[in-house]
Structure formats: C-alpha cells, structure tokens
Length: 345
Image 1 (tube, rainbow, N blue to C red):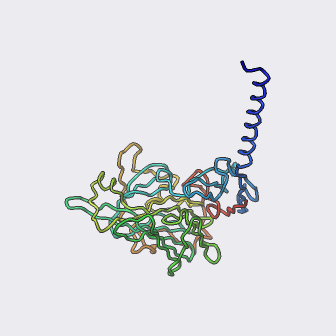
Image 2 (image 1 turned 135 degrees about the horizontal axis):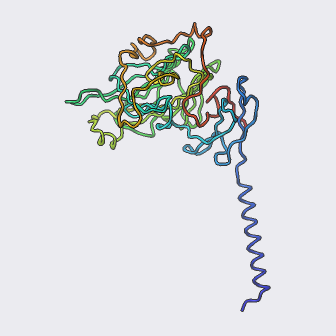
C-alpha cells in the first residue's frame, strides 16, 4: 500500500505543477490595448478604453481574427470585438445580386440594370454611386446584377473603388482598383497597409493582404468592401448561367453612416429617413424594390439622378440635420473607423 505521506507528496508536486502552468498561461496573455477617441463632439473624448480580453488587439496578426473597435458615439464608450470584413446580414449591407439591408433593418433587392449606375446614398455632403454588372440569360425578364464599383463624392473630392474583371478567380491575386480625384491610387498589398489623403480626408486600409479594404471619410462614412466572384454553388442554385470566360467579380459592402440628414436619398439612403415606409415587407422571401428612374446617374462619379440631393456648397448652411448613427451598430474600427478614433497600445 502507498503510504499517506507519499500520497501527500505527490499531491503537493501536482499542485506546484498546476500553479506553474497557470502562472505561465497568465504571463503569455496579451495585455489589452487601449483606444482613445479624439473627437471633441463625443462623450468619449480623450477617454482611454481598454479592449476586451476576447480581442485584445486593434490589429490582430491573424487576418480572420476579430479586432477591437470603439464607437465614439457609443453612450457607454464601450469597446467590442468585430470582424473587419463586411457583414452581409447586418444593417447597411449590399451583397449578392444585390441584396440590401436598410437602415430600418428590412431586407430588399434592387436589381437595376447591367452596365448602368445608380445612387445608393445622396445627401447634402455625401454621394455614393454603384456601377452594376450583370447578364440576362435567354428567356429571363430581367438582368441578374451585381455591384462592381463604388463612386464616392464628398466636398470637392472624388474616390472610386472597383472590382477588376477576371476570367478565372484567383484568391492570390488582388482584384481591387482605386482612384482619387481623377488619379490612379495605389494601396500597397499587405494586412493593415494604409493610404491617407494629404489632409486625411480619406483613409483606405486593407482588411486583408488582398481583396478587402475599409474606406473611411471621417465624420461621414465607413465602408467595408470585399471582392468576391460568383461562386459555382450560387451559379448552380440560381441558374445564373455565368459564362466560362468571366467570374463576375463584384463587391460585397457594408456601410456605416454618421450624421445623415433628414433628406437623405438613394436606393439605400432613403431607408434611413425617419418616416420612410419601406415597400419591402418583413417576411417576404424576395422583396424587390424599384426606383431605376429616380436613382440612375450618367456615370460612376456623377450626381445627376432625379432624386440626388448632393450639394456640398449648401451643406454648411443646412438645417434640421440629425446625427444618427446607422449601419454596423457593433462599434467602429480602430483608425478612422468613426469620428476621430485613434488606437494606442
């Protein structure tokens, strides 16, 4: 039989080992970073807020790991964990062919027409257009369409984000193309690689080494965008009849808006009007909303649609605006993802 003293000695040794293992685990834990909001109009102004234990880093090394985000307009100034890529099931999303989720949370489809442009958002100080690509198989009554490019206008600035055409999809190739104020813009490949305009009016940060970015105009909008092809499964399920020489690379996007006015317009923008009655009813399997004639623009960077209200010269004098926070309600990204957010370790 084993003596009680021997059992006690073994127990002590095991307890010491367990204690050492726990101490080692604690030592290996990453110390949470802090995020500070520098926007003077925020309740979070100059407050240092620690990231959650579950996502201690603003810029995690793993591309698909959730990062730490702070919303300058959050009344509690809380940080949360959030993916950097668009959430196609969240408010402000525009994905698939294309399916939108409005500011009112209602899902609807807007097909538009292939090779034409439509205003998604038109406000006094912000305009966002989309170029649609698509095809119409024989015998079908309408085009199947996807968002291929976005045109962004604010103040006197113009920015475009496009998914380049590719015959065969390759994840190892970057399919994003940018321009700023009429000039081609190069954003170096690499996770968190960032480009800033001269006066920081625009920030473009890669959310992965290729094919995914976050575009931020401080005080106005954050756009998370990823390039994807029409998958074989989607093609089979919906019978799109995608040709073999085109992968129909397109954008999945999610918008987060700051300070939209009462008069905001656009395919998506009108759903942020406080009194908007969405014709797309909850529970309808595929509620299709029209408006081709109201929101069609002559080009990606034009503001000439029938219902466009973009007027930056009048923005300073506008009245009745409301600082409503719409879109991804689960917080904002670390640098430029909302009003004046800067991350510090």
